[in-house]
Length: 218
Image (tube, rainbow, N blue to C red; front, side, top):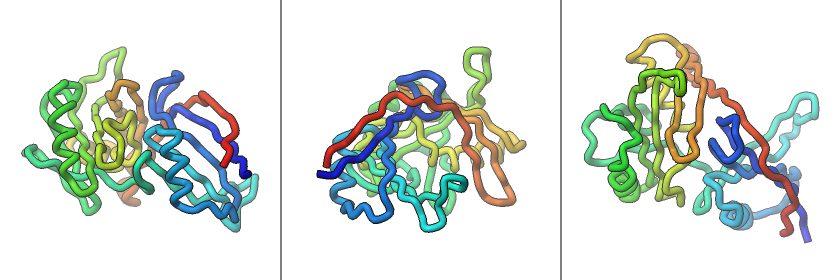
């Protein structure tokens, strides 16, 4: 019998049971577990993502270096958001699509329409985003939601990968290099982002809390 230590974190939030829950498991370099087994573990935990870290050859405690894989309950290695049909204001880059809407993304109409559109796509993902006027209770400048029924996720609580497209999309309109974002799922997540324009990268920063740890028996 193999035992694996696991930890569950809520990311992009300062409160437990908010933000994006993820199960994290550090594997040995020669763990020998098949993708099928890793997928079963992800399905058993059943958050939006289960993360497996494997130390690379140059890994040390002083300079950690891991390979990283994500598993949703239904598939491995998340893919970029893609375009749904039926929306007119679209922003496209070489890796995917996101959709800008004029009204609030919290509107309940998107619960049905966005999910239906996403489910009909080969990779089954739909991201919607809208500007937000900062207030004391919510200083974010942009709101978003992400639906991924094709990946076994009806609605993702917080999606870091989606913001690598959301942030350039809005900063091309707002100017500047920093954007405060909120993903307005039921759990709500907050991201402080920086666009490194010349490098073509987006830095994502946020708070996180540990909510559980234990041992998994394989």
